[in-house]
Each structure stands twice: as C-alpha cells, then as structure tokens.
Image (cartoon, rainbow, N blue to C red; front, side, top):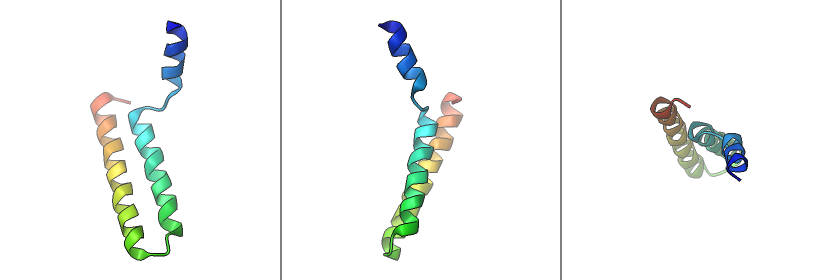
Length: 62
C-alpha cells in the first residue's frame, strides 16, 4: 500500500507544474474570449498563476 501511494504521489505534477498548467489553460481561454474585459481578467489570472508557479519553484525547489 505504501509503495502504491508513493508511486501515485510521484506521478502527480509538482505545485509549480500545476500552476503552469492552469496558466496555460487561462492563456488558451483568453484567445477565444470575445469580450475584452473578460480577456483582461483571464490575463490577470494567468499572470498570477505564473507568479505562483515561480514562487513554488523558488520555495520548494520543484
């Protein structure tokens, strides 16, 4: 059981990778959003996710 759990945890993305995946999804959403106000909000959220990814990398070395 412990080995299985270790393998599952190892297969998961790091916090930084997860934040970068979210940022990439937000960037895709921006491209198709017709309302510029909504696109600006998505851009802001994307930039925040990228900063969080950078902080996660700096904080935990992942």
